[in-house]
Length: 153
Ligand SMILES: [Cu+2]
Picture (cartoon, rainbow, N blue to C red):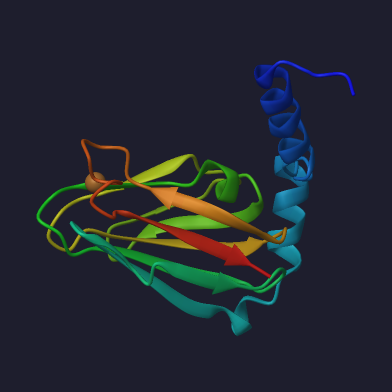
């Protein structure tokens, strides 16, 4: 059997892992999905961010279901919610800071949620099954547990 250098094997694995994900939807396609959805049946879900971790550590979601995800930071440090693969595979309607602001965009990158009660709501529809990591990249926060997964089924 021919032997490949380890780096080639690792790269091949990475490429096939990437190919397993469908391409992210175009903004126009995401907008059509958002417009066609029945937002009367929006489901409320929530992740609490603390300095020692996310609660829950794993949030289960269903493809095609409209959600309002509340992210609230109950820690004393600011925390990021980085989940690029997740954000690329949802149709976002808007993000909202309750009582203050609403941002309409087909795609978001990440959120920074300020300490001691900072809150943002993401209104969206999951488009593809998967297990998506979300984490805070500041300092050693992810090592301290400020991370979790969104599991879309
Ligand atoms: Cu953090």
